[in-house]
Structures are given as structure tokens and as C-alpha cells.
Length: 307
Image (tube, rainbow, N blue to C red; front, top):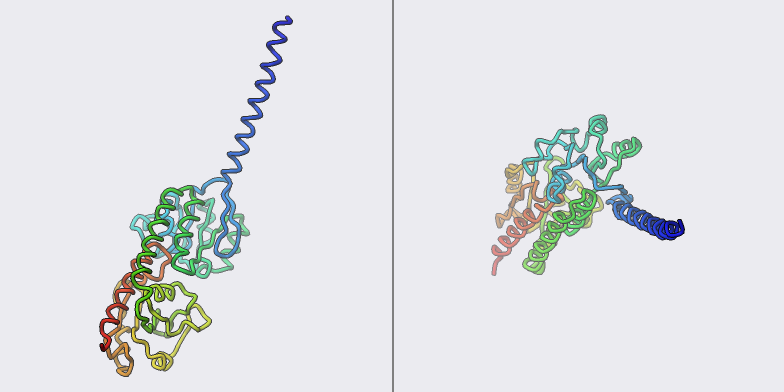
């Protein structure tokens, strides 16, 4: 009996130690599993584990999810969330500006990803009040897109793919900056709409693309992100280049309306250019495709200067 007792107590202590060790490991794993990121609105987003059911509330979010390796986690998408092609098969929850909240809730998402300045604040507040976790995206500078990719990867548990995409994005951005940002400046008017006549200010990401290409936004000083301007104001600014985007991948016919104003330098030198909106109005890795086209247009304009 004495031998059995002596053998029992060390074994009991050993089991107790092992149980404590296992408990400590589980605590550490739980702590590591919690995901915390801060979104564009300054809200701290917390997930107990990587999201498996994600609803996208904007086309650029849809594209970011696929680029970050999380496309297969999407259970809801918006109208015009059409890239890559696989995104078209994801069930729709309305337009980014007019969401179907009941449809979103019915999908039982563990994460909803929205657009800070594009989605209705009322809709976002409603979704949060119904207990849904909502992450908001709003890259204000080109390089912010890489950070958004990394945060999406962290939230979805696809860091390997997302971080690789972010690294490639930063490297390509650096290459474009080295090639174009110090080129002789070009005065640029960027037109995003005709009626009303609208442009972008210095805080809008398209203006960052203009800077990347060595250009100067002639309306950078205006306060609104997408201000309305007059034809007279454009004539007074006399841009060397006019760039338009429009609504689809075809050159908007209203770009050529400027030809009636022959006193404009952009018109006199035939510097009226088009960049597809999907490539420069969505905060995604393809933004650099649009920036590269813009840079090429400004370089063409430089080549037309009188020597």
C-alpha cells in the first residue's frame, strides 16, 4: 500500500501540471484567435475567429476580397460587384447606395464589409444595431489600398495571399513613382461627370494618382471630395490635359464637348484622354492599371510641348 501511495501522488501532481499546461495553451490559442483591426471610420473591429460568411456592400470591397484570397467566403454582393467574373455568381443584396438590409441579415454573415463614404450611414448604423459586425473601407491614398488588403486578409484568415498581394502592390507603386512622379508637372482637369460638371479635390484618391504621374490637379484646393465646377472655372484654370472616366469602359462622348473651347491648352494640343472608371474609381489593386494609363497620357502630353 505504501508503494502504491508513493506512486500515486507523483502521478497526480504530474497530471495536474499537464492539465495546467493544456489550459495555458488553450488560453494562448484563444488570445491569438481574436482578431482586432481598426477600420476607416476609426471603429475597432473584433472577431473571435476569421470570418467565414462575408457580405460586401461595395464593388471595390468585392474586388478586394477576391484579391486578398477571400472570395470564396463571400455570401453576399452588390450590384456592379462584377470583378473578377466569379463575383457575378454571388447573391446580390442591392445597390451600394440602396441596400436590402433584410437580405443581408438573412445571409447570417459573421462580417459585413462596407464603404465609408459610399454606403448610407443610416444603413450601416442599422446593421450594427442588429448585431452585425461592419468593417468600413475608404483608402484615401493609393498606398492605403495595400493596407486594406492586409486588413481584409487578417479578418478573413487569408494573410498569406493578402500580404503577398499587398507587397506586389507596393512594389509596383514604387516603380511607377520612380518613373513618373518627378517628371515635369502637367496641369490636369479630371472630369468624373458632365451634368453637373464634377471633378475631384486633393483628398480624393484620383488626385493622388495625378500626383503619382507628376501632374497637378487644377481643382485640388476645393473642399468637397467630388466638387461641382463650372465651364468658366475650367476655362480660367486652362488645364494642359483633360481626363474623363464616365460610367463604363467606353470613352464618354462628352469628353469631346470640350473641343468647342479652342482656347483651352488641352484642346489646342488634343490632350483629351480617357481612363476606364473601373480602373481608377475603385480602390483596388487594379487602380494601378488606371494610374499607369493616366501616367502614359500625361507623358504623351509632355511630348506635345513646344521645344
